[in-house]
Length: 121
Image: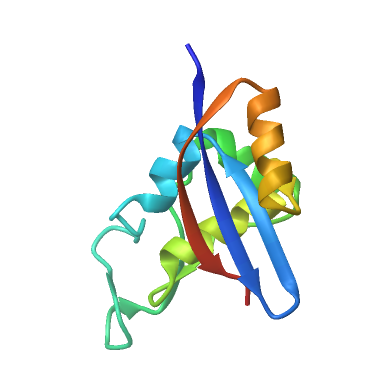
C-alpha cells in the first residue's frame, strides 16, 4: 500500500519551506483541538492563555522536535501555523521547489493527498 503524504508550504520574509509530512503530523496540525492545559481557554482574560505548550504533540514528533532543541509553544491566534512551523526543525524532508518535492514523493512511492499554506514569522 502506498504511504500518504502531505506538503506544508510555509513562507515569509525571505524564507520558503516545503515540508513533506505523514498522516500523523497532518492530523495533529489540522486538529481542531489546540492542546490547551485542562480547564484553560484561549484569550487574554483572567484564567485564559495567549500562549501555552501543546500537550497533544504525537510521541513520534515530540522526540524529533526535542532533539532539535525545540518545544511546541502555541499562540491563540495561530496555533495551527505554530504546529506546522515545528515541522521545519523536526528533521522531516524539506524541499526547495514543488518539482523537488514531487520528485522526492515519487521516488519514495508515496501519494500526495493534500497541501496547506502557512507563514514563517
